[in-house]
Picture 1 (cartoon, rainbow, N blue to C red):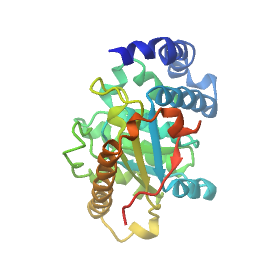
Picture 2: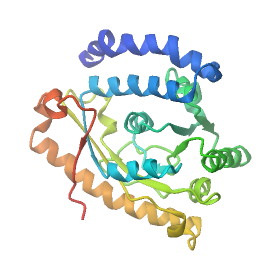
Picture 3: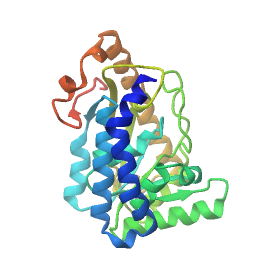
Length: 278
């Protein structure tokens, strides 16, 4: 309880201010500001949120993301899903605007729905195949026209017990957003976002680990069906989840969570790191 009370006068006040002065107005009238401005507003608030949650963010493979940006390619980001903080983390990490595809339920969530809408995110009703296809086609269009990168979690739901349960099979249809137009796919693996706002811990630092894989180009998947592609990426994710799960366990066994966040981060939003996943 103290953790939440501590957040109210710090990040809580800022979030409410940004919500009413930026996110809600931008969600209703996105045409009043360029996406670069709207995205930066969301990114700044999100980064502050993670800092106040004492997230010790470590990333492997950030150069793979930068490579695609330098090539000027718009790409599809796919990865496992553990917490509603997952998409926020990606926005905090990626400077190039990232459009999120979220579940229809998120649209009705306080703050989260307007943040997603403010940066041109879309909401998918997975029970409506026609609407889902329409969203996938919209994603393909944005990738083809070079408008924005796209983020989709192909599990379709979040894993509420990542320490014991592996990510479920990826929905092959997710990958059609990229394969229809030959866009690159950037696979990611996440672990630790479940700690951010959990009331089950009071750590001075919470480990958040990210592995960004090498881009999968059209030449890599042109001879694969979407089912085969989804299975291949899922297998890669499972391997990394096991690595990050072991790292997470060692982090607490070595009592690194007792080290003040500032000593971990040294003022940076994240630290580039090499996990033992060979």
